[in-house]
Image (tube, rainbow, N blue to C red; front, side, top):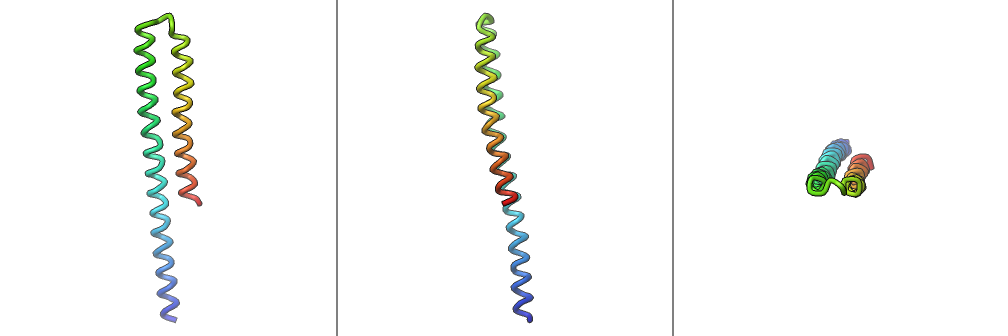
Length: 90
């Protein structure tokens, strides 16, 4: 009887630890996965504004390329969110 109780307590403690590890892993995944695209989007926008300032006639072409690049960078953040949700709930 006492051995069963110890096994149940050990399993409960392990499950609690597993949930904590999963939560911290998901938080880390989304933190890193959101930081890099945020930096990339900031750099893209800054360079596009600099290019438009140097050559205003090319603004439509620069803006189109900038928006497309920002969409690709944002997709990386969405992938990180999906990975974080999978880690957390699976």
